[in-house]
Length: 201
Image: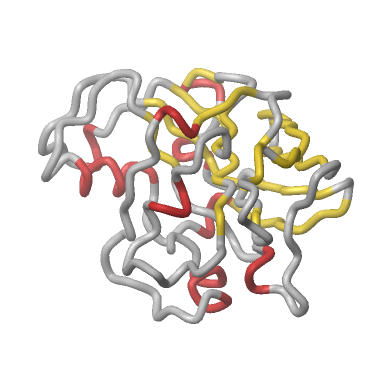
């Protein structure tokens, strides 16, 4: 919920505080590896996002002191079957082999702070399904670091995934789900693309 249009398409009021959940490393895969749809699922959704690797340990830091090592791309592919079974998104975000990360890491000084002004695109089988500016984020990267560091210590190697724009399959009429044989790509200006085929587990 870090994009007003995505909050609206999902049927939620834009929160005053970031919606936060963990994505654990068993769910992560690399560029080129297949995103695996669980056998029971009919609703596998794409979500292109900015990946923000942390550069220095951060505990209760100001926005001005927020430090990132650089930038990458994440596809927060999500299982949407019965998404409201729990009041937060952790189960649907942590199926094995669903979170694609990479392939490039660009140091922080190579791109604008917070990737402001850069465009993100997600393409499914070559069709653009998401397109938005990184400037559309409700909570900037620095603000996310400031908020997160108030209750946990961010450490080098941690990655903040900054939220997806509108255009997700869940919100489309009819819904657009990823299927075996599809190819999904996420690209940010001067970064990417991150490309993954879809396969049934």
